[in-house]
Length: 310
Image (cartoon, rainbow, N blue to C red; front, side):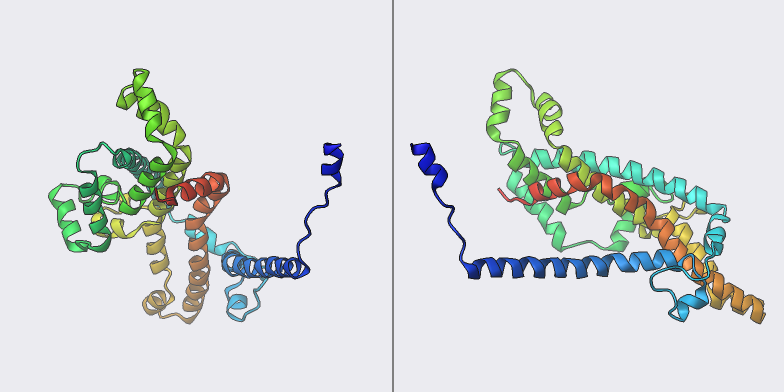
């Protein structure tokens, strides 16, 4: 009888004004998100179609939704340069090594700072936070790298920016939230040492954080070129971004036109230069964009848990 009564109990109906406001909110959210997605996605799409279109059509505004005057001349110019493959290999090496070092340091450092029994925990955190507001600048950084003998070496690309304090604080918050103090006490009662607990329990539970940090540092290291510009003198060690920058400069129409003095060569250089500009953007960003769909799930989870302040 009680079951039948519960089955006949009508569900509370939401007031009409509430239902209308919910629908309006949902439609407004969809509209705003659509505009935001379009504002972000269309420039990327335009760069892709402009890189394979006639530069004259691009300049005349004839390229909006589809390529016009299809050509691969820009990509042929880019990939005909022998330094591209070497720069790509250097970028892969720098990105992989720098990301691995950064993830190891940040995960281990964040876990150590999350331990309430760490001596000087508050002082260490305070000193780290100070560096978020005050930076020594480029010249002291260059002098430190020089005195350590890392100029023109691979270590100049992977060591100076290995640990970001902001990421370290995210890792600390992540372990504060996901690894309760009681779990470590229970493991110690079972005979687990600190190292065993860290490698067998804490690290496996931090998969989302590790993926998040790996993705952040991979993107940052792949796009980095300023450190290479400052610390590297040997062109054979240049990463892809610096190689593409040099190709872009070499294709500058003003330089080519000034050196040749030929109007036809000047126009051709201008045409290729425009194609190279769009092509270099596609070549340099495509590897990073290809990784995002595979890491998006872990990225969202790791960022949300790391953002929670305990």
